[in-house]
Image (tube, rainbow, N blue to C red):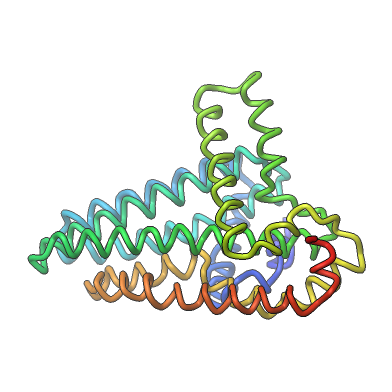
Length: 298
């Protein structure tokens, strides 16, 4: 099967340059041979999770050599994190349950590696309380930035595709949860319940940060409205892309290599929060300047 980047990339507008040019290229190299095997997207997600968890162990308890290996494992986890989605889209195996599994794996990798980094920083600096506070603040920043990015990415892609893209839709996830409750395993029921809860939290955050944008989530993707939205939101969306998970994982891998988790935590807390603030203000101004958006969200 001839697999091209255009077959699996939803839009370059929702990808930061490192993710688009480096991650996606490497993911294609891995995905092409895997498409000829019976391996499933969830199995690739599991490999990504394992790489991240082993990296966390080496960060916390490993030698300098093992921490260098952890940096490679962190990067590998980031690459595998995109391969599962490519396989799912090409094999037409995408599902809300798959999205939930992928999101849960991302969360566990982030929590475990952040805790490990905070522990290592506390041990090496002699200031465990400061290290723990930095780690907690960095994790909270990551979680909020990722929720904002995921929402804007899903909304942008929905209008870009004329309503075909339905990723991250809470109503759809709730419908999937109902089906899982009727016939799914306990694992899937718990996972989908958490996923729906997380989407509710995301919606609540958006209603506080960008009330107009949050109300557009239910706006029909008719041609004129969708075209106007994409044209006016392309630039803000490209800025939101820097709040995605791929760049975070690359910077984390670099922090492991140079043993500067303090710098990484501060960058995540301050630098990326500034990016999110600028993107939010930019998007709100775009929405406020165009009557078509004000009318749709009124």
